[in-house]
Length: 219
Length: 219
DNA sequence: AATTAAATTTAGACAAATCTAAAAATAATA
DNA sequence: TATTATTTTTAGATTTGTCTAAATTTAATT
Image (cartoon, rainbow over the protein chains, first blue to last red):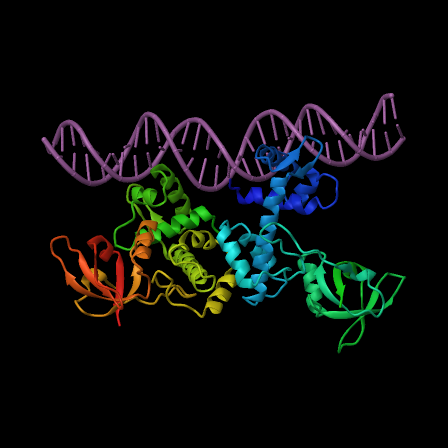
């Protein structure tokens, strides 16, 4: 069975929103997909008929095993293409999201497997997110939030909490990217800002909001 | 301005059909696109309103300068992706057409230019067709039809006349591909079959239909 | 030139995905 | 618990691209 680009986008959005254990609500989905609640209701009925999710009116929605499998396939393609764009075509890591959003809907299974092999079966995409393998399994990230990093422990930036251009613009300005090594020198309780130090640079402070949007792993 | 996948497919089909100097007819287009004449008429009105072509009812259709530019952009993407699939991802040259048909609609200009650079600005795709450059200019092929090749002149297969799986299957069976070097040893007037010889192989005959589907350049 | 045949266009309908506005169900609050 | 407020669903309309069947135009043939 094959699915439209729109259907795939709904499945992917539900997948990202159902990380907790509650059902995903119609309004949440409408916001995520920049559409209206009424449109979401219509589509949920359709996707339920295709057995991709369980849905009862007024009760929200959750992916079925089949829906999850489809979602993982799309996420796999998205992240492999992001890796390709950065690693092979030299895109900046902050400019690949929209292109990958289109490429993730290319249907050829063979293409995905050949691309994966060509790239050397990467485990994480350029934003630090894990790439599902062909069976849908992902490596577990031992990311911790930068705000929780102990003082004076050297760690490496391994992920970002959002893909917003606003965040990526700020990170670019501060010369912080995936792989950047840093340590936390002080934490200020007044505004929860933290002072960080990157090798060969002077220490500087970053806001609580920014620290919460950064994930690191100790090295 | 941006165009739907359907619109792009119409423009591409018209481009391929208008090689002669006559206008492209509604029925020709319907056959090419596996759709009905009535649907074509509807779409032609729409594309005319977008100034991509000139169309008068009952008189057929021809691309405008703008339409031609769009078509060349799509052809460029199609052939670059085919080159990528064969050259980088090791696809067989006979299995890339359908995938490229999807990839050609990815819209990012930057992606096309980066891909082109990564591939080394190739001039011809794996089927021997020229790849338009970023200004829409294509190298001219000095292809001649295999049926017209003089006896005992060594030539190299440089293009095929169609992408049909039937043709590609036959070529695979006979171990003929782009780049294969061969010469014509005899021509039989009875059925216009020709005997060809590939280095280190015994000579064998191929049908008129097959010979007409192969283009070669002398080396 | 008149008639038949073929190609093309119109008219009206349909499916997919969306929307607005109104109704119904659930949640929150007095 | 009764009453708002919020969320969600229904009903009906819209757009895009398609279709069938009928009408029109052009081409071919007698």
